[in-house]
Amino acid sequence: MPARRNPRPDWVTDRCVTLGHRIADLRRQAELSQEELAHLAGLERRSIQRYENAKRDPRYSDLLLIAHALRVHVTDLLGS
Image (cartoon, rainbow, N blue to C red; front, side, top):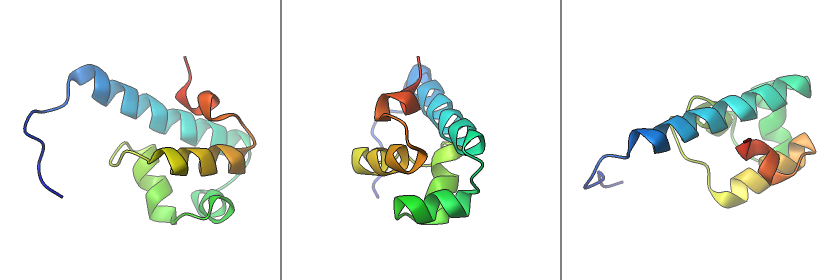
């Protein structure tokens, strides 16, 4: 994947970290491991790990799958 021409603003990075924390928090509340969430969402465990650690940005479709697996609305992943 080509490098970005301009680095992301700090607020974007902060929101990605917040999203990752929110996914991890909701996963723990559901008493699921990363492996279990990945299985329920039809994703790889490494993808869940990367999303939670803000190493990768999830696609919208992956957010929908994660929300469905956690039995929450996709907007709940985004928090406030």
